[in-house]
Length: 71
Image: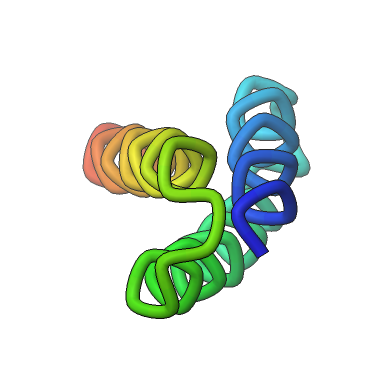
């Protein structure tokens, strides 16, 4: 699950910079965040799950900032 969280974190941060598709990155980041938290609680791939959680959190923060700039 740590690898899945890291992969989804990387994918969501890349998709977050594509102009009309960035709202999808929020959904991907939330799924990655959930998987990272589950992996961290089960103590599976601790480093990868922490990296995935950080990437997903950054993506969500960037999406919130972008959403506030648009509105």
